[in-house]
Length: 481
Image (cartoon, rainbow, N blue to C red):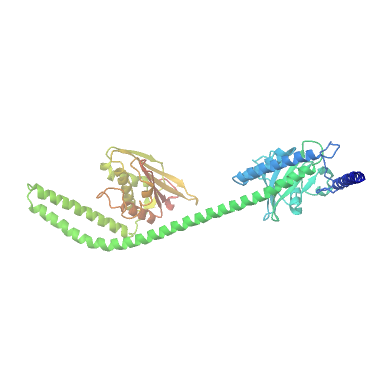
């Protein structure tokens, strides 16, 4: 019995001592200094008691949920503008404030630029908002610390700095820092309820800028990588284009040398064949229809071979141009008259700009170019169509003017794959025996000799358009032809 009494007494004393120790620890815990400056209130204004554990739990759960959703939005943002908007809107929506302003910092120019603002309407028609380092924002960048202001009028050390118009009375200004590099400043301005910002609200802003720093840095690195990739792609395309031009140049040189040698050798036997055909036409009786038909086929084939040889010679030799001031419309009209017998079921539309200045050109060579383009258009419209001829003056980027000629048809068009080859020697989309594939190659050489440009735009089934650009004769001074 005595032992039982001692046991009960011992347990009672232990419980009493445990309760006393617990109360002492609780008092010590409440007396620990807060992690933020003492001037920041530990509870919301108007509250007479410290926040309870339940209030703390509700706040922190709400803050964690907010930060989790913000992280999801930042992760799905597509670019810097989206990231800046997410950051500014998140701070504005979660905290009881009037406006949020996010600035980005450029360390080279030492300037801050407006990235996004919520609750503050900046006139975008004005000059871009750029802030120097002599401002409050610049002060935050230099100090790299969160600035919490309860009443701007009372902060004497800030009066010597330039005050941004959105910083009016109470605000939190937090630098966005990634690995010791300042990326910008986030301003959270003017509470909707009386009193300074609380420790909880400052904590939210600090967490926002931490997340913002990581995301902004990632976006910046991604944009730099994308820009670099675009530059590399552009450089690769330019290099490939230059390589193609070099290959084409070497190809043309080789073909020219081959054509020049072969053409002269072929013309001799062709001449003998033509002489033989002429002799046989004289001795064969007109009544011998079958031999006459055979001779006709041989003669046409020999003539076609001779035309091919002449095209090869024109292609291979860089004949000297006989340049004179020419009215381009007259050259076009003369060339059109030479092919008018081929214009069956084809409507010709002239869109000519009046008073065009003259161009310095070789009339015969240009006529050869226009006839080739007209014939290509005619062959592309076997069932008829519309041939449009345009001429007008165009202002070049260098400040000079040029005369542009466009020859457009409504024919079968050229596929994208074949369009890349139209200027290659011997390439043709015409059927066998209907073209040598040298017309456009020769035409391009002639235009290049005139220091002009020629290009062909086409789409399968929708027709083609040849565009020729020629320099205006300087002696004309842009006058009328």
